[in-house]
Length: 193
Image 1: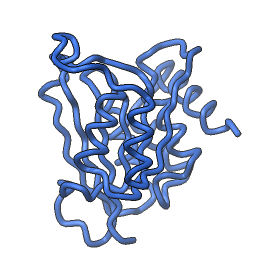
Image 2 (image 1 turned 90 degrees about the vertical axis):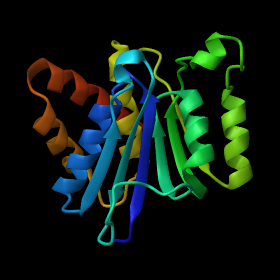
Image 3 (image 1 turned 60 degrees about the vertical axis):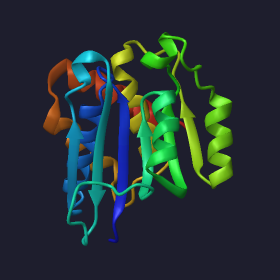
C-alpha cells in the first residue's frame, strides 16, 4: 500500500485522541504499517488538538508534509477549513462534524464565524470531496467522534480498514457501558443508507 495520510483536528475535549487511537488500532488490526503523532497539550485549555496518521509501506515519519494529507477528519467547522487550507492535498477528502467551538479570534470579534457554505465553496475550488456530518438526536455530545468515525467507515474513506477492524479497535480501548454506547452510535451511522 502506498502512503495514505490522515490529519485529524478538533478542539480540546471533543475526542480527537480517542478517534485517532481507534483509527490507528484499526489499521494495525488490518495489518497495515502505521505511524502517528498527536498534540495533546492544548486539550486542557480548549485549544486546537491535532493527530497525524500515516499508513503504508514506505512511511518513515508520522508527520504529514504541508499539502499532502489524503483525508482530513475534523470535529469542528473552523478547524475543518483551516486543515483543508493548510494540509489537505488538491482533490483530497474532508469530512467534518458540523459544530462550532468558536476560536478565540471569533469570541474577541477579531474574525467572523466560518459558514458551512464557505467550507463547501473552498473545497469546490480545489476539487476536494467534502462531507458535513451532524446528528441532532445524539444522546451525549461527547460521542460526536463516534458519529464521525461511523461516517468515515460508511463512506469507505480509509482504504483496507474494514468494519471488524474498527470493532476490534473499540474493544481494545473500551469496556462495559462505555463500549456498548459508543459501539451503538458507531453501528447506527455505519448502517445508514
